[in-house]
Image (tube, rainbow, N blue to C red; front, side, top):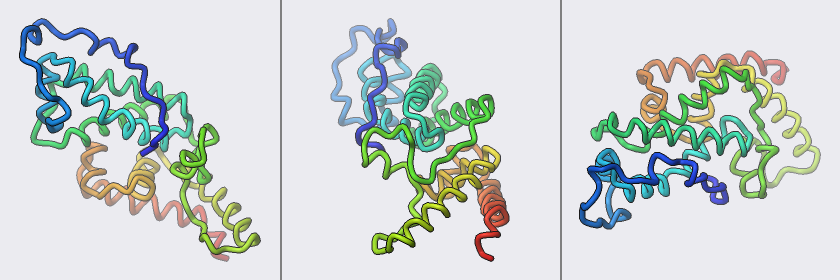
Length: 224
């Protein structure tokens, strides 16, 4: 999670600034004490406070997920805001038998993948986003392949290796890149990746297997 991620523009998310008619006159609730599922049910009924609490809980995690995929702060903020608009406009379709976090991450992931396909964005920075505004943000958006006790020569070699790995990941098809990032950068479990991507568990494992094989082939020259 990016602790210094810029908050989304709440004023622009106009779908939750005015409660729906069926939310008027209802008693006040302590929203921070409610779980995600309870909040989602209330949000579907038009409770503005429930919308706000869900946004507070998930604006940074959603931004972080998208940011790692596009490596552009401004673009990630825009995509995250659009993903929240889509999610809350469809809040009535949320099935409470599933985790709310995976549901909203799925919407964010699908929206970002759509954007990547349209823009043909294929850059993944192994060293962190060039748009990072702090060292912490830079560290949290890089794939670590270095050792803290390496010497300057080893450090240079690792940076050169990182650049080649970066290029190889960027050449993967969107689905393969996503599973690699979700698994090896975000650290999601296989079943969570399956839920987020809306794929069978077996498909996720197949994608990971193929993605790793493609990376091995693209990087085979490094072993010689």
